[in-house]
Image (cartoon, rainbow, N blue to C red):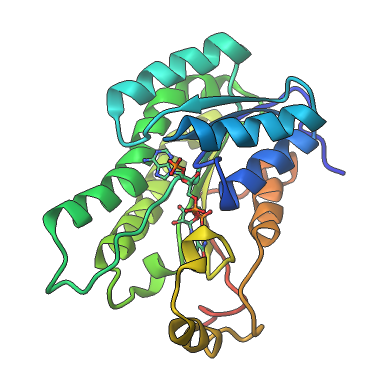
Length: 249
Ligand SMILES: NC(=O)c1ccc[n+]([C@@H]2O[C@H](COP(=O)([O-])OP(=O)(O)OC[C@H]3O[C@@H](n4cnc5c(N)ncnc54)[C@H](OP(=O)(O)O)[C@@H]3O)[C@@H](O)[C@H]2O)c1
């Protein structure tokens, strides 16, 4: 098993779903993980469960990634607690779906603030320690919706497409320090976010997935582990889909 012994990772949206699985997978392999979510209860539960199996491997921080000041303070706190940061996984994300005709200004802003500005905030907060790492990695969890668009998700698609552009710019800016920055674009993965989809929508989606099923959180985690590891040192500025073939050209 690949080792992350001695590495410190920050995982936003680590309270459940894909982020929870990423936090656990990194901790299982020896990393110390800062688990971030808005609610104390969700990041606390993930950190406690990890701590029970791997004592001292995780610490919870209840912070809204959309809050610039709070995230800069988080950066200082994590550094004080762990002493360094090597890996940042920007996974926190929300949806506020609706057709444009009915989409409210606050639905647009809420999604852009968490999904896109959140990544700006965390990169600003953690880039200095990451640049000092011998294995500096930034991973942004985008979405196939950011590549394809989707009726009823203009805000979400714009946030994820923006995150992909942001990824490429960060990759270029930090390449001189050997820090890589890549985006992962999951398709439809079984989590709380997709469990709420109506049956008819699920069937329509399924018909468009060549591999014929929704993905599991582990399908995303495996790629995160690879891209965060030493084997991916020469890969940067890329967008990799984990989507059962949905977006193949
Ligand atoms: N599931 C899919 O099919 C799928 C497909 C493509 C892309 N994605 C992306 O993958 C990521 C994870 O998705 P998921 O399905 O695992 O979602 P999820 O089950 O809804 O979990 C989202 C996590 O993000 C946290 N979060 C939300 N807003 C936050 C904020 N402003 N600040 C800090 N934490 C915040 C949530 O905790 P709190 O509510 O406590 O803050 C929760 O821990 C998202 O970026 C999503 O867009 C998912």
